[in-house]
Image (cartoon, rainbow, N blue to C red; front, side):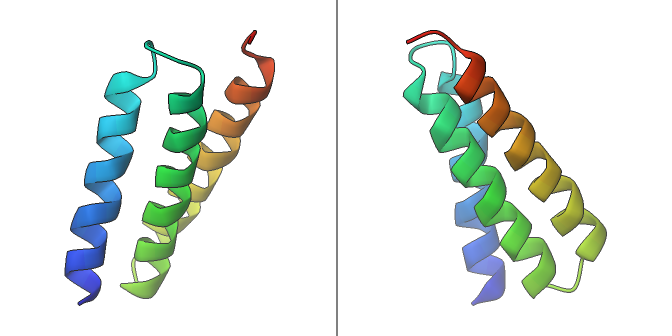
Length: 69
């Protein structure tokens, strides 16, 4: 079940990353995808992955905040 969750979370994150240039909302969705992927990392015991994805989530939130409407 955790593996399936991970596949969905990482796939969502990658799709949102690919769509970021289309609209500002996709940056926020990418941040969410990174947070979901981070949770997967911690749930699966891959804490370095979880930490890195949490950092990417914060970076994406900052980009979302700094991107004009």
